[in-house]
Image 1 (cartoon, rainbow, N blue to C red):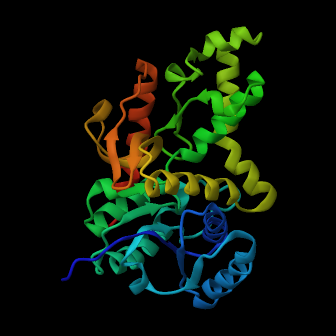
Image 2: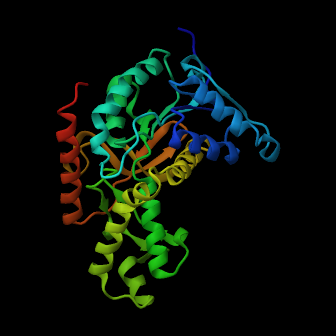
Image 3: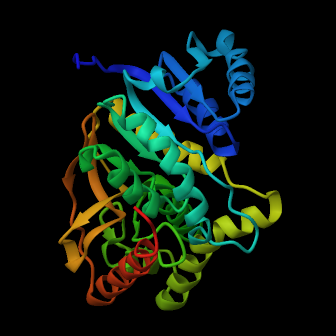
Amino acid sequence: MKDIVIDKRKVAIVGCGFVGSATAFCLMQSGLFSEMVLIDADHDRAEGEALDIAHGIPFIGHVDIYAGGYDDIVDASIVIITAGANQKPDETRLDLVHKNVGIFKSIIPEIASRNYQGILLIVSNPVDILTYAACRLSNMPEDRVIGSGTVLDSARLKYKLGEHLDVDSKSVHAFIIGEHGDSEIAAWSSANVSGVPLNDFCELRGHYQHEESMERIAAEVKNCAYEIISKKRATYYGIAMSVRRICEAIVRNERSILPISRMIHGEYGIEGIALSMPAVLGEDGVQTRVPISLNEEEQAKLRQSADTLTSVIKGLDL
């Protein structure tokens, strides 16, 4: 099979529902890509989204955006998978697992059969399970198969802390790790505001009830998606902006540290499961794992989160 030359300014999006279309709209405005192919089981839907977004080209600058098929992905630098069933009110992300693993069994082999050499970015939920499934079904190098993970959850945490402390959220450095879901962990022990330990900065701003505040904020972050889904039936803008951020790190080879979902081998006693931990991300995918400082309680919760995901995977036919 002849070598395929990857076009760094080409992206493919598989799935044109709420998340896929919002992601396409967000990426079209980013200036990162000059070519964007949309793929959906409903080809008319993909064509409609491409036409709608393309009408903004006079305001943004030229982007070749069109509906296509899997043959169009072979030279894309990133293939973003958003296809899958939507999370409904009172439904957890893990409740989606069997439906969406079934959908992935039809999508991932199509990509793998074309000897795809770029980055596979999984956004569909439950993202950690589906990132693991994509690794197993594609046989691609693990560093090139990543999930959007807790990039959005961590942004929500920074937003909430910025509000709590009345400071710019970009000055807040904190991660949500583990499952993108109900067993996620706020890594408080490594959190800081411009290098100042979080509790010290809280006291600078007149906040002293640390445990109470941390429990409240962590719960608000975990329940954000449920609140949005109950009010508007779906979440898509926040995750679309998170995908844009991940794409920036890859396309620009920024080597940014982001809490993406990736395969774990031995860290904190966890083996053979995908979950969200910080990593250095660049044009070839994961460059370096980043073992952030966690206290014993956080490490124990991380292992519990991994056990939750492992128990689900054992019930899958992969």
